[in-house]
Image (tube, rainbow, N blue to C red; front, top):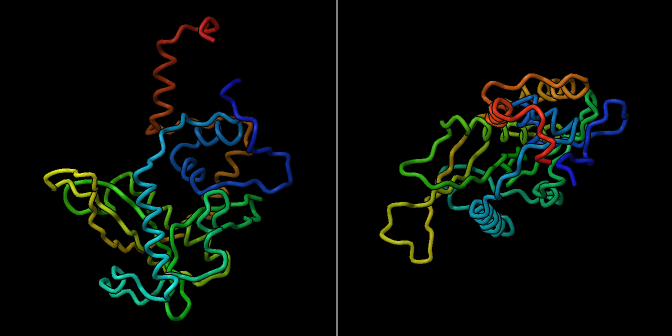
Length: 253
């Protein structure tokens, strides 16, 4: 069985909607070559192990906020931060949270069925929705959004805001990251990992999303593989490997 995928391949001659996830648009923004190889040719980047501890934190935070959702009350961290809102009760919330459905928009200009799965949504008394994303890490000092890789977190937030807005909701420009930071200052593990929880506001600008979708679509329509992004470590690896590989590698297949 080859490495090449045969499903979810973009066909430039098809009139049917093509399902595109938020993470794949992020791939395009990072490297159009990797995006093209994946979506047009079926050659994805190598997979990495799942971040199961982060997933556990995510799962438990959802359960915790759901308790306050059921009671129609704000979580204490919302009260401490003077946020006048409560976790949203909505019939589609579970679908919005599901990785393979998420919040969906049919982008007519590209025929993309664009989607992304939110962690949580809060609502104000006037019906304005607030996008919330859970994050987990473990580092000394306070967590911030200043890291280079965290630019992707900000785009993630903005895409969720865009998706909800395109579904007809009034969406706040300010979203929140509920950031869990595993404590490293304790004397011992003792079968328990403790976290400090911090709420970080972020004012998003989602005006770029339409343009990014159009550019991603144009990328996939081309019959030419794009140039690699100079910062893409996957492309750098492929280039470096080809430098030392023999021209005929059939014996290794």
